[in-house]
Image 1: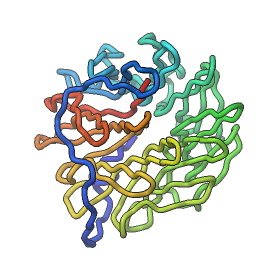
Image 2: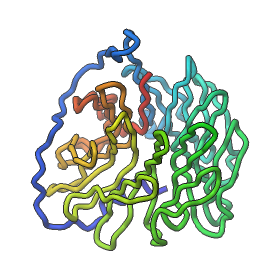
Image 3: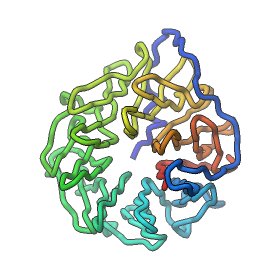
Image 4: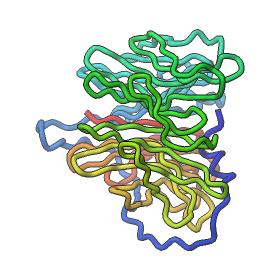
Length: 343
């Protein structure tokens, strides 16, 4: 799979000057648990991702309140891509080699057998049911799939490349965002097209609040990518002018809609970006490649995970709380933070 950072390096930037004030400034800060304002107890912050070991092999990681735990032994490349906490149980979806894995409290379950390449970036728990969205190759094309309690469901027939990137369950309805020659949303397995057939279009995140369904993703316009937010199928472009941008995750809290991704400034590299009600706020300065991959809101606090390359070209796993930065890794080895959940 080609990472977003590689795609963005090939995007053609415009020469327009972006005049947006940076609303969040980052500085290193040791994690300190916060009160969620409701229970009177400190909140626990769970982040998953990966970090290279001494042999240069990516290892699936879970950070709880900044403390790291390895999910694999580092013999085979692995990554943790999504985390969901239900009661006292911590669910993590990711992969090891070609195998999609679901970890429950650190104990792994294989969802695929490793015969073909497979990938996931989303897990959701509803009651006693655990949903994982992803894709698996049939040897020629990738098939969008959903696993419910380990049982596989295919959304596409393998006639073209497709993928399921995000799952959200609301009541009896299961929503899955992904791509099938275009950005699409499956509701209970029925496909809704969000964009025209263009090939370079993906729906990366979905969130449901009441009767409203929010989906985010990106669409290539020939010279640049457009970050998009679809509310009930109606698209909104999040870019400033014609600067390239991508949207990776969405979270709705009350009347506020938070989207994270990355956007080019008038700098050499894409900056990690957070949009609150469509207004962009930059978490990095655009000097080094950065990405904001996941967002979670609790009370008045907004948590964002992602990574930023340092001056040595190493990715540093990062967590921002209300724009204040915490580095989860020291930058000596490549690392990424892909998903955040706050309990």
